Image (cartoon, rainbow, N blue to C red; front, side, top):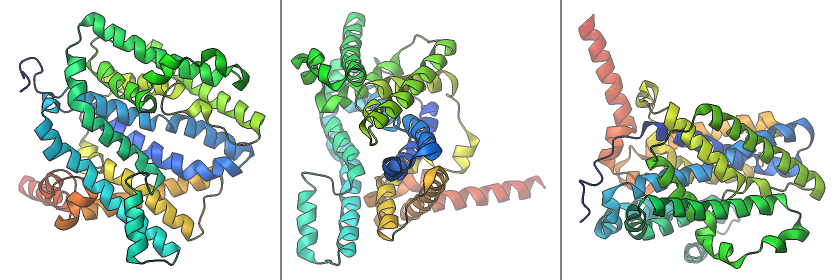
Length: 380
């Protein structure tokens, strides 16, 4: 068992609440804008490019938060806890939303029969049926190795942590160089060592970087972080614009979520929120969005696909913004309702019904309203 005296219990990480909400909005916007970025031109494309260049920080931020929460928690060392508690919270919702995505596809193809459904479910063991579910496959893989990672990173001394950061930096700088150099010069940086260090396509580095940033005690001044974040955002915007014009089609090399500019940009945002927004919010307590971010993520692209099947696509920047808002609202109320129905709660949200009643479902909301009315009545 881990020695809890070395790692005292961690309180609630308030700045993660804001980062989760921001990253959830970003990922919905990013997927809603995907088709427009391939077909829109002019001012609308420029505005979408600006917003999606920011939105692509979503996956690195999610990975950094998960990396910190897992690798700083002594319970991560327990394999039994992993198998009994953590993995089912990912695997069962993934299976449920995969089944929903499969049913939707079969209905659209007018082929709703048992055999093709089972075939699609078997196929999902190899590839996600809905493209956004790739992230859940990645998280399950990271959770599986998390006890080993926990033991490894927490055994490092100061020099070991610096060495680990240097390796992460090497992978990140390689991705930055690959984005900046013309394709004909790729051979100059095609180092086999760096290719092998990009474990889980480079996402492992981002995962561990979250632990490093979350546990780091040194504060980086805002006057350094803010200009750096702005400069990185500008480079991503301009680099994406340049490559898109050069290739005659939308090219997102600078917006890579696995390594490079977006990861460094996300790291700046992580530290800015850590240093400036680590306070509780009454609004988030009253409107409990944070516990529902994962099921909103799991549902949003399936709902978007349904909208597309019905022939509705956003037109331009305003259309993407409006559809993003609609998708977020519909997904929020849908998963909040699912969390209120006991047989569906764990399957669709990964939360136990008791946790949902304590944090986010309609039982929680109505209980809070009742308590508020009672308190006002007593005061009057």
